[in-house]
Each structure stands twice: as C-alpha cells, then as structure tokens.
Length: 599
Image (cartoon, rainbow, N blue to C red; front, top):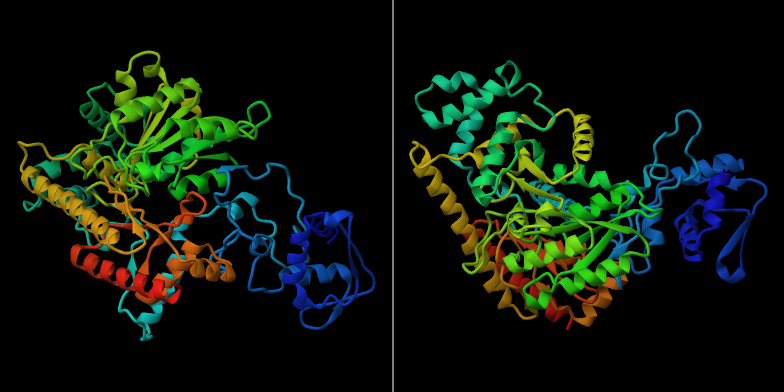
C-alpha cells in the first residue's frame, strides 16, 4: 500500500484527480487530500479505518487491496489519458498518438515498483497493475475495439437481433480467403500430399505436385511434416527461396542468409529484437513510415524501442520524401540513437509503389546515416498500376555498386498476401544481407528458443517460390488462377478508388499496389465536437457510427497514425465484386446521412 500511495501521490495532478474519480465509489471515509507547490506534489493525511466497496470497514492495508481489486468500468490508463488521448469507446488503454512530433519515447526500462505485486493467499498474483508495462502500452489497431464490436454484432445477428443490415463486412484486415478468395489449386495439392503421404499413389493428383511433396517429405524427420524442422527452416526450402530471389533479381542469393518464419511478422519481430540495447546511454530508434502498419508501433512499444515516425507525402501519392527523413532523424537524436530504417513497399495502408529512383535515394540516405535497412516487401506481387513496377531493395542496392552494395539489409516476404492469401497457414521468410556473421549467429540462437516455424507454412512458402514450370502438367491451371486473382484485385482496387472519390468529402490517392485504400475524409466541426465529447478520436467516432449503421468494419486512420488534423480510414479491396459494390453503396449513403446529421 505504501509503495502504491507514494507512486500515486508523486504523480501529475491530473493523474491523481483521475485516480480519485476512478475510485470515488469506494467511499474514502477518512483522509484529506492536499495539493501544494503548484499542484505537482501531493500528500495524503490518513488515519483510522477505511470503508470498502461493499460498505464494510477494514484496516488500511486491506483497504488498498480492495480498492485495487474493485471492479470499475474504466481502466486507470484510460482515465489518466482521457484528456486528448482519444481512447476507443472506453475499451482500450492509453496509446501514443501522432501529435506535433511522431518521435515516441520508449517505455522506461527501469524497475517499476508497483503496489499490490504481492497479496494475501487467494488474491491474484498477476494483475493489470503489475503486468509488464510495455505490453499494456502496445496496441494493434487492426484487431482492436472496432473488430471486437464487429464480432459482438455478428453474435447479436445470429441470435436474431434486428439491425439495419444482415451481415458484418470485415474490411479491416487483409484476410483474402475470409473475403471469398479461392485457394490456388496446386498450392493446396502439395500441402495435402505432405499432410497425407498415402495420397502420393492417388492418380488424381498431378505428378509435379507429387514430386514437390516427396522432395519436402524427404527433408522432414521421419518423413512427416509433424516433426520439428531446423530452427531456420527446412534446408531444401531455404535453397528454393534463395533460387527464387536470384531469379527475381538476377543477383546471387545464399540460402544460409535465409530464415523461414511464421509469417513475415514473426521474422520482423525477431529481427527488431536485436536492436533492444542502449547505445551511448540512449535507446535504439527505428524509423517507420506514417501512416504505418501497426505491427511496427506495437513491436517497438513491446521491446522498448523508440519510434521515429516519418510522414509520407499524401499530396504526392504518398511519396517518400528524403527531406522528411532528414527532419524525422534530426528530431529524434535527442532521445534515441537511430539504427533502423523501415520501408514498406508496396505500402500498407497507403498502397504506393516506390520508383527505382526513390529507392536509390533511400539507400543513399541510409548509408549516409549508418542505418540498417528493413524492407517489408510482402506485397511485391500486388502491383496494379500499369506505370509502376516492384523493385526489390536488394536488387537496387546491389546494382548501385560500392559502397552501397555492402550495406546491411533485411527483406521480408509472406504467403499471406500476393495471389496466395494463405494468412492462417503462417509462412514467411527473411533474407539478411551483409549481416555480421556473429550477429547472424545470435539471431539464429534467439529463434532457436522457439524451436521452429510451422512446417506447413514452410511447405506453402516452398510452393510460392517454386511454382509449376511451363513444361509441367499443373502450369496452365496455376497461371490461370494466379492471373485471375491478381486481375480481380486490380479491378476491385480501381472500383473502390473511383467510388470513394465520388463521395462528398472523400479524397483517395490511386492504389498502385497492396490490398488497401486509405481515403482522407473531411469531417464536420459538429462531428469532431461530438467525438471529443465521447472521448474519442474523430475518425474512431466515424468508424463506430459506420459499423453500427451498416455493419462495415474499417480501421480508423489514427490506428495507423496520421498527420494531426487529418482523418482517414483503411479499407481492404478484398470483398468479392458484388459484395464490394453493395458495401460501397452502403458506405456512400451512410456518409451522406452523417454529413446531414452533423452539418
């Protein structure tokens, strides 16, 4: 109790008032609150006994336990962050938002002395108050409060609740198969044959699928995908990945530099963990684009790394300006040591595709400022704009020659995106170029603690990098399915952009690639005021209204971070065409009603 009291009453005045508000229902019957020294120091003069949440009197120490354990509709983080933090419907804890600066200090690495870390027998050992601070701070907007509410609405509809819509459309996440995309036949055939080797004698399966399955099973211990693989992944699959990269770029690739992972996300997290060390007394900083994919902000918060946000240029099709990189880097040096530059190409959530010239400028910037490049290239197959093309950072960096070809680079790929859409199988790879061999050994040691990535994900990755060849029996069907999927995505991307740009108050840049559009919306002042009254960010307010009125679930731009004073949301282009048309029409009609209500 004394530790908690000391921490509480040495805190900021607004936090103390929030704490008192939070516990006002517990009837603090004795004690006097004193503010002094401009409101920055407090003390609590206590005496006698306290009255607990059920009305009983109790000794002071037991009263503290009752206060902490008592149920309240809002968390401590929400109350202390309520002034301007933009919590989401009172359902999430406080988050760091982009304000005047997008340089986010990491959570303190000092030991936190929290009250009630121990308690009497029968009380909870682990509570919200003593759980790891960084985990409480991290957020992942893609699966945040809006999705939770969408899932609640689905259950309400199943129970017969009357809504102005018949289904929830989850346009919040890039889950292609959930939105009706069909799996690639050859991919599933190889996967099936590795799971059920008895089918290798079934004449209904093509020989090229059987050949790939046999190759993989020969590398599996006991001939089964149910066995552990090497921590870095099955060797033959890593060799196939290296060959795929070499064919793509025309540049040699060493399979020893390839690590397979449970989707690109796990590989990225394993890589960023290497930087969780102070340099010259300062935490490491990681430069990420704003808007950004929330994996990065969540990972940096979890690891205690400093987030250095650089704004993409919305007025120029979300271009990456080197002058903005300079600004962000210079502002960050006072609180951290910048060590990593993250680039997402094609972009998520913004859909831009970097030109080769732009990539060359980024490489020069990273070299000049001694930064490790992280290239998130999971959407490399998703390029729709006829005037755009995917250029890998490895290819550009290598072809620039010395000194750039000797720079450190980590690039990532996934089976979840592209034409595959195999999100739930969890397969990915990272290629680590010019990394210090001793650091590579440390990375391998780190991932070995998790034993190995899922073998089924490795199998799917093998098919992605080693698809049917023109002279093989499955080639024609594979090519037909792949082209159909990518052409359909391009068509839907254009449909979404054209429709949203026809809605008053919407402005959407062309989606050159990836699986999303990120429209900017002009919100009436009355709507912004209503959002503030609800304690929400205006785009969060808008997204909840949209969900409750139409069943359409999107992600507010504040979940990806955005320039102050601008409002966006991210929607996928994944619903099938007819459902997409219905969704867009419902969105349009909702927005017209919204403008009328808050004009």
